[in-house]
Amino acid sequence: MPSGPLKGRIRVPGDKSISHRALMLSALAIGESTITGLLEGEDVLATAAAMRAMGADIVRGDDGTWRVHGVGVGGLLQPEAPLEMGNSGTSTRLLMGLIASHGITASFTGDASLSGRPMGRVITPLSQMGADISSAPEGRLPLILRGMSPAIPITYRLPVASAQVKSAVMLAALNTPGITTVIEPVPTRDHSERMLKGFGADVEVEEVEEVDGERVIRVRGEVDLQPQTIEVPGDPSSAAFFAVAALITPGSEITIENVGLNPTRAGLFEVLRQMGGSIEEIDPREVGGEPVADLLVKHSALKGVAVDPALAPSMIDEFPVLFVAASVAEGRTTTSGLEELRVKESDRLDAMAKALELVGATVAQQEDGLIIDGTGGEPLAGGGPATTHLDHRIAMSMAIAGLASTAGVEVDDTSPIATSFPNFERLLTSLDSK
Ligand code: S3P
Image (cartoon, rainbow, N blue to C red; front, side, top):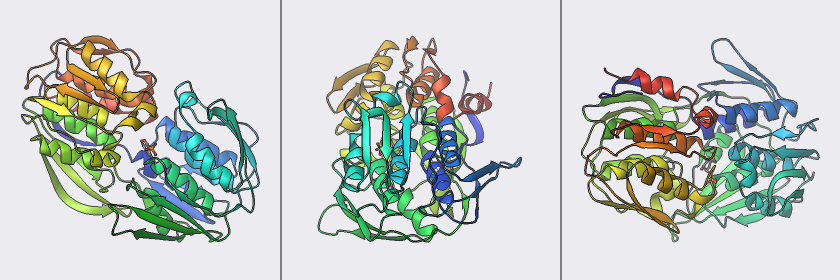
């Protein structure tokens, strides 16, 4: 672990959400798609293995370019063995959507973390479309999904702000006759919409003006997808750890290259700026249909803020590391409207409250958020071991907390980091200026 200021330039791995979608859509197009910058973490590799098991030809070249020959919309084959989803909620929920409108049966298994997460949120709309799904009690994994072809187009209003549920229905719609409609009351990440349009799908997004942010998404099914060349931008959720690391470590100045800054993902950077963080966007440009820039981040004296709950969907995965920043800011940071954090890879409100308290932070846990009184720039005591609960973002957040502590922070299990950010430790060490 670095012990001095962080200095230098890094490039974080490809975006996880975009990587999953790139593999899935390429596997449905007829012809060869190529993908560069794909995140080669365990979650995305689980998606690749599942698409292979259903007939796609997916090969990684020595230069890191992935080549995918798809089976065509409606062409997925019956997998011979259960689809092993590991820790990946995105793989599970999106693939359930894809399979729901194919006349095949698949079973899904996952690790202890994934097996505790709610799948009822996708089981409900996919059952309405005709899929027959039997799961462990309370809609958990393992489950068996028998798809229906032809499936039934539905209109579905999302009861939770979830891009995974939205995407599951949109993916099911691809092989469903007619128009399937998803209404999202609050905008969530829109990578599926963007990429589906790029592949030539018939997708229409209507912003409903009178209602704040509500969007109606219509997908007309049974349209062929055209193979694409996809460049995956860097993952803002991975860049987040390094942005906070540089902000809270005195003397730091780093550049994080090629960070995806889709407005439905970039909420953390806005909040960190509100806290007084110096984060500059250099050379804004487009990569793979997504806005991207290099981020120049300098150590800053941070102040606590009341985080606007309306920003939550655009930074839903970044709260653990925001809590770390808040722990060493001056004054109080309050967060609310974060019930969804309780059903991520772990209960992230509880896990972060306990881990941060263990290393000396002042945290009050509420039903829907944390209230944190920061040290005003003083280091935390440190110690541990912090319990990660098979959650990569808890492990990485607490590693970053260690940078702003006197004794360092011990983390009980770093293995989950490989699900989304295999070279995290190496990149962090590479920024050590000592
Ligand atoms: C994701 C959506 C979010 C996010 C997850 C990735 C996606 O989950 O937390 O890491 O790729 O669609 P929810 O849909 O549960 O909010």
